Length: 350
Ligand code: NAD
Ligand code: IPM
Ligand code: MN
Image (cartoon, rainbow, N blue to C red; front, side):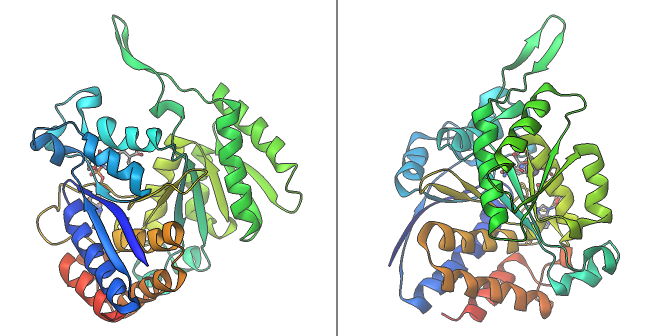
């Protein structure tokens, strides 16, 4: 099969973890007899440094055409002085999500058995944890009017009922394929958008009588995630809360470097990226854990190309690497980013 996708490595550790993921994809393609066609483009600070916009037209055109995007990370201190849409984050990542209507961001949290004794939480808090965060990705405070006036600064938070309804439906549909529970996280004791969120989720739930629905306030959720994470199956939440809660969830899984994500729309369009950022503190040192990026590539094979066996082969190799401690320093291993990529590619077979 022809696997054509857009590759946007971006900034900081993005190109490092990206190179490892590409090596694994090449191994998969050669082992399973596929043709890999990688459309490599600039995004974020890398595009700015090349004298272009954070999201160059040819990069966006490739994303739109291939419908399958593997992205590293954007941003870093070098571009932090820039304002508004001149910034990598606001000028590339957010427009990509918005313009491609990638409103459903799925981020898993299921600690691998090999990680449990190395994680900072006690074993009994982690055993059996297996939930997925369904994060709304194209609305809320990220996309409201922002600005400055003579009083100060403002960021408007808006949600339409339709925006809440469509992400809630995604969460309930996903729960039907899992343990049939949705935990909706909001701040309905304070925010009007959260009141609309809760009312709409309750209404959507009526069509899913088999699914148990729980509501939690986001401040309490940060605590419940550390004390009873086993109780969660699908966690449904708005854009900013999902951003924050998934960094917290990464601690349950051992590192920021192990959680992939898929950002999906109603049609075939999909973008796949680790939940972590460009990690300027470790960039260029071969220390970055490439597993989140490699797992994102596996999700791309599964969700954009229907290649379940190939995706599974990568996930099995990742599990083996963890079991054999073939990992980077964040997980207690001694390998470099590139060596982890090589190990996983070898384990998949080439
Ligand atoms: P970060 O996720 O880049 O890093 C947070 C911490 O986790 C750092 O200590 C880092 O070293 C560590 N870490 C992250 N990924 C790792 C990996 N693969 N292996 C080992 N350790 C890893 O978050 P930050 O430092 O707050 O942000 C840095 C920059 O990245 C900012 O400019 C931010 O805007 C950007 N960012 C981009 C994305 C994205 O492109 N999707 C996501 C988050 C942050
Ligand atoms: C993420 C990142 C982005 C977000 C930033 C870089 C805009 O933190 O993908 O989690 O907040 O969505
Ligand atoms: Mn984030």
